[in-house]
Image (spheres, rainbow, N blue to C red):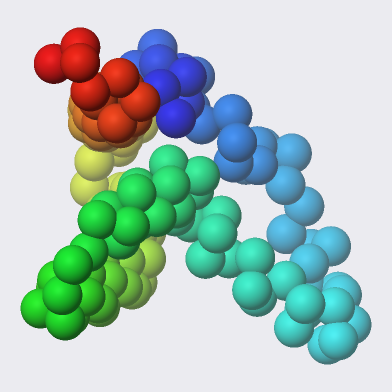
Length: 133
C-alpha cells in the first residue's frame, strides 16, 4: 500500500489499476452478456483496492460490540453513496479540475494513502512487539 502511495505522489499513478490508455472499451461492449455479468463482481475490489480491503479487515478485527459493528456498516453505506455520487459526476469533475488539478489530487490522495499505510505498519509493529512502545 505504501508503494502505491509513493507511485501516486511521484505522479506515476496506481500500478495495481489497469492502464487507461491501453484499455479497449469496445472489446468490453462487444462481449457476450454472460461475460459482462462475470466482470461486475470485480468492480468493487478494483475500486476499493488492496489498501482499502486490508484497512477494513484490520479495523473490523478490533470491533467489540454491536455499536461498533453498526458504525462500520453505516460508514460503508456513506462511502458507497459518496462513490456513487462521485462516479456519476466524474466527467464534470474531470473537466472542472483539468489535467493539472487531477495530478494535484492524485498526489494529495497519495499522501493520505501513505499516512494510512504507515498507521497500519505501526499498529502491526505494536501488536507484534508490545514492548517497543
